[in-house]
Image 1 (spheres, rainbow, N blue to C red):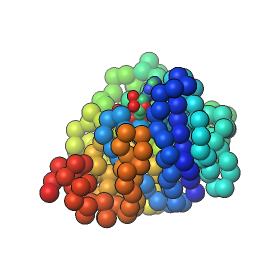
Image 2: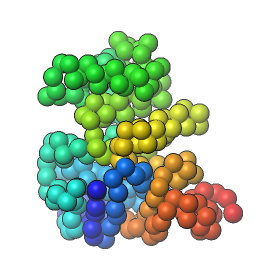
Image 3: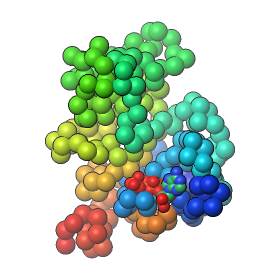
Image 4: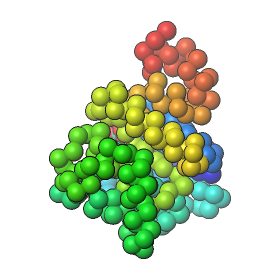
Length: 241
Ligand code: ATP
């Protein structure tokens, strides 16, 4: 469904963010993108979402296709319209707006009825947000803010959801709940997921396939199970073995 071939990204025309990155995300699958800080995971997501320009980054080489369509040089808006939606690292909510208003921000251009249905769906998935619908999102807990950020992305009816470190800074129980909801969305609604996650164990437990990046390149890839069984992965990324 989503395919990257030999992607190379430059920041400020000279700093290589990633190079020669090729990866495939099949329809309906959950694919985990793992690696240490600075390995290039966020750069890959930003390239797909076409938001690199905000950091003076550019796709210098390679190709990104989505359902066979070349999206390498589309605008950020066109990519969202094609069905690729990213939940950015750090959530990026409008802190002074309410939960409901933040969700509506993800429904730009939709009819009122469709937006209303979207909001009901998000509250159905994350029921604990229901009591906070008119609360300013800056006052929510980190976990609740992450739920709003995912909810806002879902308002755009994505076919492929990209998540950048959704469990960053959250207590294990809360992360588990959020990742569990993402897995359920994929299973029950067929949403394809590309997940960047620091918690490699949790990510591989829910993923079908994984890629491990180091210094801007893909060093290892395989089924989630094969990575969970790999001695190097166990030692360096899972902290066991
Ligand atoms: P993290 O987990 O810290 O977000 P990451 O795996 O997502 O790490 P990236 O943020 O994609 O890694 O960084 C990949 C490389 O690109 C790093 O060498 C980083 O220093 C460089 N880089 C990232 N953003 C910029 C930028 N705005 N300007 C210059 N270099 C950048």
